Length: 459
Image (cartoon, rainbow, N blue to C red; front, top):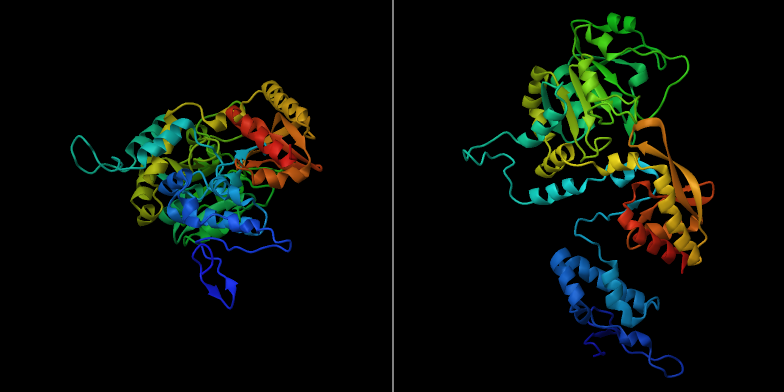
C-alpha cells in the first residue's frame, strides 16, 4: 500500500481522496506533492467544518478536491490547500454570487436589475420561515394571500380601484390577454409590437394566449382613426405599449390613452418600467397614476425596474377587470411567493431604494469619491485615470436619459480578473479601456473594489 492508504494498479499509485503518493525527483529530493494533505485532514479545518454546516458537505469537499488538484499540478503550494479551498467557497448555498455593479447601468438585466433595499432584504429573511401569508392570526382562518403587500400597492396608487401581482411583467400581459381576449381581438399599433428581450417578441406572446392581433397603423405613425376603424364587437381590449427600450423619432405620431379610452373597449397600458407616480428626473417616462387618470382600464408595470423592488408584474386598475384576472385559473400558475410579497411590501412602504439613490447620485460627489479611489490605486502602481462617464437607466427604461457620472479608467485586461475576484466587480469596456463607474456601488464597498483592482494589477 502507498502512503495515505491508497491501493495500486499495475504499479501506478492511486490518487484517491485519502492522500497523495510519495515519489522522488531526479536528484533524489522528495516530490513536494507528498505534502498534499489528506482530504479528511483538510475537511477537519475549523473553517471548513463551519462552511459544511452552512453550505453542505458536497460543495466544501468539491472545493477541497479542486485545491488538491491544483497542488498536484504544481499551481499551488501543498501547505495552501485548506486556504485555497476556503477562498473558493461561495458566500451562500444559493448558487448566485453577489457582484458589484460598476457598469454605469442602474438596472442591468444580466445583474438582476434592481438591487433590493436593506429593508426589503430584511423582509425577505423574515419571510423565509413560516409566515402568515394566507392566515388571519386574529381569527385563525384563511386570509387573502399577500394582503399587506397588495394594500401597500393600492395605497401607493390611489387612482387604482384594485390591484393584483403576478411573477413578472410578461406574465401580467399573458394573464390579461388570456382572461380578456382569448378568442377575440387585441387592437395594437404596429409601432408597439416590440421585442422584450432574449428573443421574446410581444406578438408571439399575445398570440400564444389564443387572442388574435388586430395590427393597425405603421411602425412610425398610428392615428386615432386607425383605432376607431379597428374597434368592434370582437375587440377584447386596446393595448398601448410604451416602447421603453428604444426611441422612434422624426416623422411619427401616436395616440394618447385619454383618446383611446373614449372608444369603448378597455385600454390596457403596459408602461413597462414601473413608475407608480411621476418622477421629475424622468419626465418622459409614463407612470401608473397618470395613466389611470387618463382613462386606462388596466396598467401593467414591472416591480424590478424603476420601482426598485423584486421581479413582479403589477396590475392596477378597474376593480371588475382586476377581479376577472384574479379569479382566472391561470392566475394560480402565475402567483408570486411569500418572499416576493415581503420584498414588494418593504420596497413600497420602506425607505429609498438603491435604484432611487443611484439615479440621484450627485456627479460632484461621485467625482470626489472616485478620485479618492484613483489616488490610492495610483499610489500602489496601478495604471488608472479618472474619466467622465455617462451612466444610463437600463432595464428597458428611459432610453434617452444619460446620467452624468465619473469612472476609473483601467487597462481592458483587468476585466476578466475583476469578474473572477473574491468579490466580483463588473465594469464596461469602452474605447479600449475598462471603466468602473461607482454610481451603483455602495460606498462601503469601495475597499472591495480597491482590493480587486490591486489583485488584478498584481500589486
